[in-house]
Length: 259
Image 1: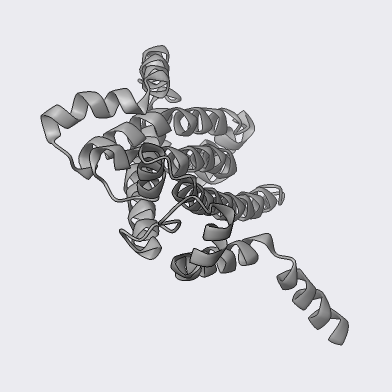
Image 2: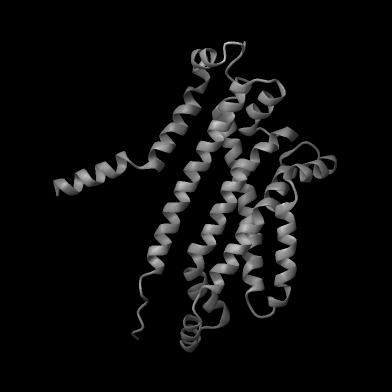
């Protein structure tokens, strides 16, 4: 029993997700008090620590922007992926993939440049840019996931009297979930980094110190913003990895054929 307790304690001590969260909390709370450190690193700067906004507010705004855009991208991407992998929608697959690929290759900055004159300096242009940029991995993950479901599983489900919707929700989506989630994971990580450009249109994100630092030749500001963005991406990636591993282990459990 004691050995099991030590094993669990050791696992927590070396958990990168836990330490990432602790470090993110520490930096958000303590960055404003690191003036001496950044003054020593950059003695030529009169204001070495970004203080126009609290880092907590920037982090929460950044997370909110990514969450909203990623949720919209998941709804659109998964829905489109399910449509083009089933009867009645397969003929649209090439067109959907082409349109989504164009959205991925279209620079987010260009989307902002087009949307801002129409919508003004607000989060909406940034959300549109992030949705377009995050669709392709989700669509590809959904298509790959559904196509990875063995045909025998579908036949068994139909033989059990399931209608097409029941086959989709009870058989295909649960088995395809790890692959779909891997696509969502890629999309969210991309958007965490890309969301920093939203600050170019007046949206408060962790890109604010980066943009201001670049325009004012203040390397300390750039490092502070970039460090928090990178840490946020690493934490999110570790959380998704744990979720995908859990679903993958569940998927590998052989289903019962009795009854």
